[in-house]
Length: 440
Image 1 (cartoon, helix red, strand yellow):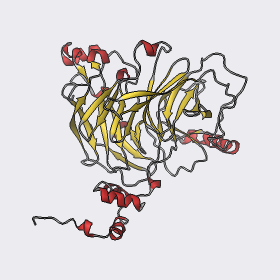
Image 2: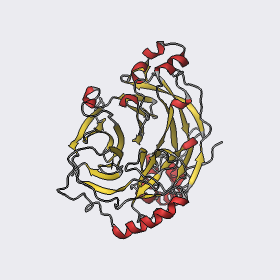
Image 3: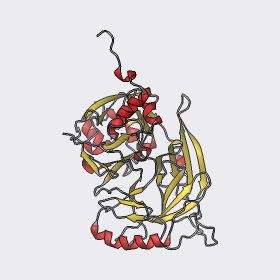
Image 4: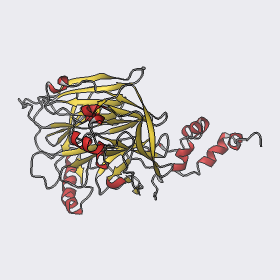
């Protein structure tokens, strides 16, 4: 036939809607991507139930030093209806968890899948990068597609390792990241790892010699997926923005650098997050000065705009360890017995209300800012930052500067006054089934 007829366009909307209602949620999500007319029909008729998609914060996954499995920090009265993983969480994106050894897990549906063995051969232009210098990150948005991708992002090792592996020091003067940048990417569409080439837009972050100076224990702290782009917090605190749609990437340098960061902090730690208005970057110094920026990409030049500059200290003294949120034991039946008793007590004593649960004014103020403090996470849908202050979790509202005391982060078995948190992720349940499948 010289001219193909789109039979679906000949169907009345009511008939097509009745056909699509019989499609499984995963396939229905795929159907939204066929054309604008189908997307409008599915959305207008509410066929892809909103309650299946990530739309609320269920709690925080917390990983600790010397603890194999993560804990779940949330309100004890919450009716979860899903299972927690018994493994180390490497990343989270819109309801899917990336676990150790490349397992994927959806707690809301209890579905699991193992990715094929990842490639280990060094990519072109990054021959000095070993498999131990690579971190993996998820890119998944179920409101757009039921498919997901996993990116392997390289870091720069120590100079001596670079010279040894690259058989010379000339590579130290090369730009980082290189352009083109060859990345290994897994796609659930094909079920395969493949090498993809991404061209750089704009300047590099620096030279390999510059980047290797940053060897903090967690060179990649967080990544966020927003509006089709993956934002990754990299060494020297630059953010790498990867766009799969046009195979490009951009280096976004931090809002402040060098001596300006070190003036009030010996160990400055930027924190990348996603919240109500997009991509956020926060810096909390040793004296509890909190600065928050929002990424503005509305003009040709990407830039950070200061959203908040607040002195959080001194704090009211927090008495006791209790709060409306508790640690849910997600791994050990042995620990579960003790925590069940504790949670029942919490449910009786607290009924959490975010409007009423702020820290009350008190004359018992701390004169020194000597409490250990770090950022745990951004609330994905509200301008709220979760803080860990000496193992007590606080919720700080950017708009009102209100502080809420949520609870204690010390798991069973910790005898010290402060638990070392390795990583933390906000969890937003996705109840769409058949997202995960077995890959050979």
